[in-house]
Length: 227
Ligand SMILES: Nc1nc2c(ncn2[C@@H]2O[C@H](COP(=O)(O)OP(=O)(O)OP(=O)(O)O)[C@@H](O)[C@H]2O)c(=O)[nH]1
Ligand SMILES: [Mg+2]
Image (cartoon, rainbow, N blue to C red):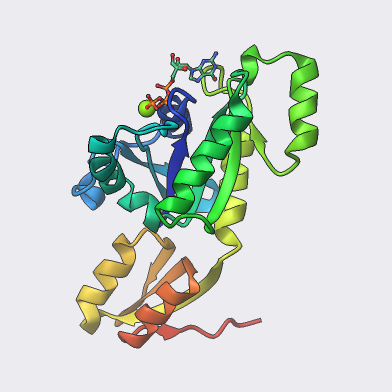
């Protein structure tokens, strides 16, 4: 499915945001995602779009040298993520500098040019005046309080919007003779609906184009939309 990774300076509220985002959802240990650790959870967005959201360790300005390797290892998921949520402690006086430090680390590990959504957290302890300034300076960002839940619906809406920008909607037909392909497609997290005929299933997908390409190559057929 779609993958989203939470990144940000240490103590910015990444883990709290993960909980607030996915609180009502099943943890990732359900059968489909048994290989994933507890830092990854599923988030179901509007119309059944499923997203895997993973937490990361906090970024700091000067990482001790002996931690660099293990730190980078935990960021493998981050490198693969379709979208990064850059969580910022809006109440921290040095948050602009912290954002810069995080951007530097992202560039270092090769995530410099992916999609990043800035998420200003802890808005519950930011004054109205500062909030207005932040919104003006960062018009494309999201503003939340993971603690109170403020802004979480808007954040979910933005995540969906950004993921859908690089996805296509398509119905494919898969014959039952391709049982393995069918099972994989149904488990992929890209399937939002399915209907069964006598010899095939039709799956409604919301899927990145290159992933759709793989499925079509393996024997799924595009279904003509009947207008
Ligand atoms: N006031 C306020 N506090 C928050 C909010 N979100 C998180 N916190 C607090 O900030 C502290 C850090 O939160 P975490 O979610 O652990 O932050 P983190 O980014 O995961 O931290 P690391 O994993 O150590 O990098 C905790 O004491 C949280 O309760 C918020 O929206 N408002
Ligand atoms: Mg954390």
